[in-house]
Amino acid sequence: MSMNIQAPYQLLFAQNEQEENLLKQYIQREYSREFNAIIPHFLPHLLGLYRADGVLVGACGLNRGDSGALYLERYLDAPIEMIIATQTRRSVLRHRLVEIGNFACSESGDARIMFAAICRLLCENQLDYVVFTGTRKLRNIFHRLNLNPLELAPALADRLGEDALAWGEYYQSQPCVMVGDLNQGRQVLSKTSLLLSLFAPMPSIFTFQMRTQR
Image 1 (cartoon, rainbow, N blue to C red):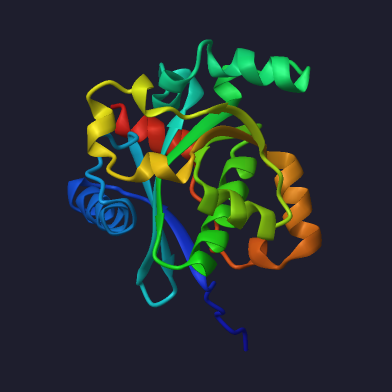
Image 2: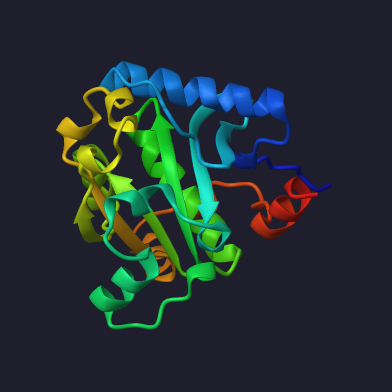
């Protein structure tokens, strides 16, 4: 007799407007609580991290590099792939990187689980780099995971124009534009924790984007 063992967590894309609104409300609530911010921009593809009992414990937005200009590139003086290539001395393909933004979790423990889920998702979809704007709090979470993303540039409020006013106290947290090597991150997490084993099968980013673009 086989046992049906349910994974503790599942990472899911929002499939319709109702699910998108649920994730946006969750993200907005967390940013309002922490930064007194009103989110002026959501990334186009929203993800939720759900416990096995269906409770939402984390959310973020995702945008592939080949979809156009990334939100965080407003902080930069050159395309993100050129800056990464200069810093790492490696060839970087724009379609193999993904921007993560609107990151929100109620608890720091859930944030560590969320990062592990994102790392596994992006690796399984054959992507190389994740780029994001990291606050002091997020940088501390990475440190606890033994991960060392590379700082590329400070994220300065004056780069955003009118959008900056909506972010409340966010820029007091000294955010930086950062990049993480996904395969390196997965290797570290595999050696130092069991986090990568907590999830149900990951969705396909490519299938999801083709479906939403029809």
